[in-house]
Image (cartoon, rainbow, N blue to C red; front, top):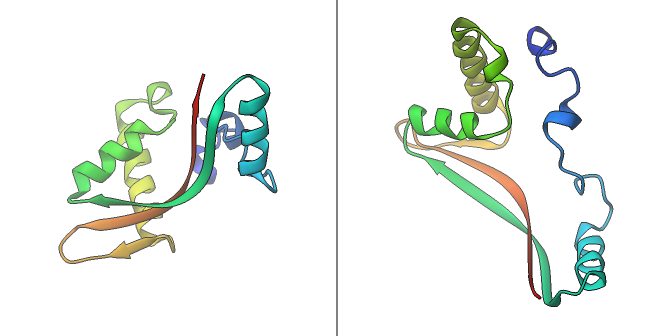
Length: 115
C-alpha cells in the first residue's frame, strides 16, 4: 500500500526470498548443497496451509514475518496490522471457514541434507 512505502521502500530487501524468481529452485539448491558437501540431499516445494483459529492468532503470524513495526508509532503499528489483516483476508489465497477460522495457503521450499 502506498501509505506504508516509506517504511518498506523495497519489499525485496525486507522479504529476501532469493529463490522465488529462480526457474528451477529445487535444482539450484540441490546442486548448491551437494557442492558444499551435503549428502542424502532432498529438496522439494510444498504447498502449505496455515489454519488460524482466531484473529489474534493470525495477527501473531503477521507480526512474526519481517515487518517495519519497530519503526512505527503505536498508532501506526495498529493501523498497519489492521491493513495487513484486511489485505490478507481480501486476497485470493484465503479460504473462509466457519467462524473466524482462516486457512492461508502458501509455498514452502524444504531442503534436507546430511553433512
